[in-house]
Amino acid sequence: MSATKINKNDLDHIAKLARIDLTESEKETFLPQLESVIEYFDVLNKVNTDGVEPTFRVNEQSNVLRQDEVKESLSVEDALSGASRTKDNYFVVTRTIKNGE
Amino acid sequence: MDFTKLTINQLRQGLVDKKFTATNIVEFFLDRIKTIDPQIKAFITITDKIALNQAKIIDEKIKNGKEIGKLAGSIMAVKDIFLTKDIETTASSQVLKGYIPKYSSTVYQKLIDQDAICIGKTNTDPFAFGGSTENSGYFTTKNPYDLTRIPGGSSGGSAAALAAGLCTFALGTDTGGSIRLPASLCGVSGLKPTYGLNSRFGITAMASSFDCPGVFTNFVQDLAILTNITAGLDLHDATSSANPIPDYQSLLNKVDLKGLKIGLPKEYFTDDINPEVKDSVMTAAKVFEKRGAKLIEVSLPSTDLGIAVYYILVPSEISANMARYEGIRFGQSITDSTDIISYYMATRGAFMEPEVKRRIMIGTYALSSGYYDAYYTKAAKVRTLIKKEFTDVLSQVDVILAPVSSTTAWKIGEKASDPLKMYLVDAYTVCVNVAGIPSVALPCGFDSKDLPIGFQLIGNFFEESKILSIAHQYQQSTDYHLQKPKL
Image (cartoon, rainbow over all chains, first blue to last red; front, side, top):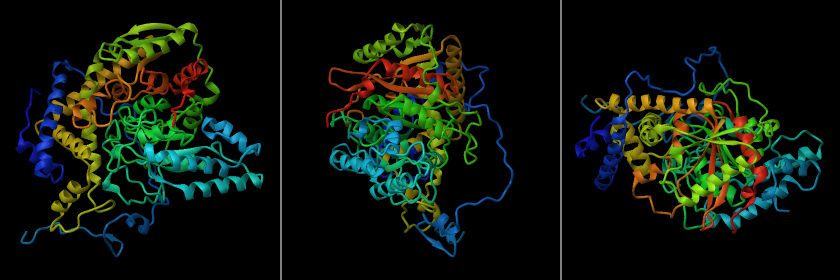
């Protein structure tokens, strides 16, 4: 990790990976902001972490298992109640395969 | 009667002794909200009808000689990232505008089951991303001590509601300081418990290995009562702890201050800190010294790495957690797209607030191909170092005492345009979250502008009973927690 700069292409790439449409003015605002935050991360370069195990969770738990029992849960109606579009007890989504694919 | 001054136990006892009714209490707080909240803007939703109805049920129980819950008579304000069945839950983001959950978060439900009365949902930074409430998709909450200043965040609406006397206690979450910072800047008490003590189920997820639900109160005794109710294993949250929960309330006087070893980490008392804040926190330390405690300088050398570690790991987890907001199952959406990818992008682009987008993008970058090891894995390794420093120091001293914020409440707008500047306000809170240990914040004075100052007591894993006992004894010797803003 060295003093990494991000450019407009990187920003477009990240926004696409993150599935967020950005306007031109948002890009102009975000680019220097993200740049300064990411540059700030360089402070970690000076730390020697040879032989240090990473911590992904702070408690000592590993796999937490339970019995596979049927329990009361949300009704279909409740589970669908927040959806913008539904049909016949399903969520309706926009076309996932483009014409001609 | 001024119900804002009463503790949870006093409110309940008053009901039992028939000095007043739950309806009296609710009407009193609704009146206050009506006059005071338009200036403070702590609430996003006021649940007046639900509150009056809950009060009626409690009053009926008493009338019929039935058992009432431990929290009967207490008025609760709920940060709007806690799902509340049949009550709109926006997470202070346009993304979830109009979302009515069909189930409740575990912590909220446990409190309701003890007859706490929900009076409303409070403003926060969207999905708890921020330290001032200025990122909210609706409005900025004002500090009750100075309406031109921020209340701190992200749980700023909850802290401001309590400081302004609009509830008995309030719910918050602390992922990087979001309970302790606003508690400190608004002059109230708040507990960030050990990771896993309180269930995260039913709370909009920010960073799953950091998020800690907790409470704000006026009195440490009330923190103890509430934590006894909220804590414990929840089968809906695999990371919730199965440890037995001690009776915090009965242990409030257990820790003997005489001979208690209090560590003052030198990295938290540098020249970066406002001198008035430093003086006030040192004065708090002296209160313990006067009662026989030993003040010992300790060192947490990786403190200045906390922000970098936090703002790599947390946005990484955010970028994954926020993937669920695609506009299909809940929330607002742009429906005129021709294919699914542009549907996602248009919906997320249209409704996510700027800070939500920034954090998702920082996380996406840190986890992206070619950068993963340099950022995410590196930060996770430094997390190990920070955690070890805390547990090492806490094997030499009983508790760590430190400031919460280097300054008192700042002006609205002062840091809003510079995300990095805003991130740095968490410098004294994030390391505790990186490590996963508990910390209680409580008021210890005022600066020359009459703005509240707070300090925190940090303990080792699951040492809530110890830090609450020490904090309680501080409140027995001082009256900062009884002082309230003039409104």
